[in-house]
Image (cartoon, rainbow, N blue to C red; front, top):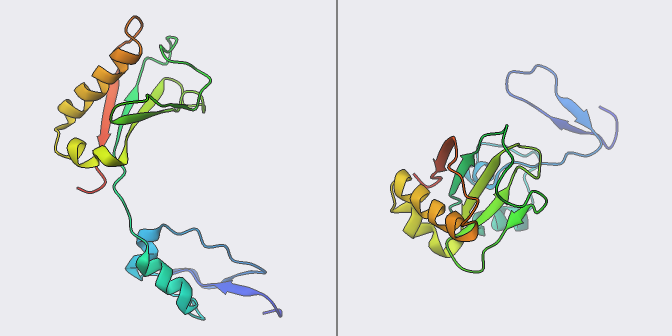
Amino acid sequence: GPVGMSKVYLEGVAEPLEAHIVLCTLPLGVLKHGSVEFCPPLPAYKQKAIKALGMGTENRVAMLFDPSEPVFWPTDAHFLRPVHGRYIFANLHALGLTGVLCAWVRAKHIEEVEAMTDDEAYDDVRKTLKTMFPDTYEEPKEIKVTRWSQ
């Protein structure tokens, strides 16, 4: 290929992609697994950094509320951060996912929530939301608890 061009070979694709620059945005877990081959190999300092980086658990309780009804939480803030408690709330409604609020488990509480059943985790989130919005809280139509370490 032309001078200064990089090639990316994809499994199952006959011809490589050519570009002046290749920006790799693979998840850390994929890089750690070693299933992607770089030619030439990544510099030693980058390989060392990939090996040294850790991955944490990111658990969430996603809730879908009736999209035809107004939501009970502020619609403009992207995050709702109670001062105390196990959760930070991502307001996906403000980002275009109508009626969706997602409770992210704060890092220091991951193990506590991991030990809960889905029902217990949602009940805990519900308690927090009822404290934050005592007069307007409504039950979601659906919930999904993610458990990345299981």
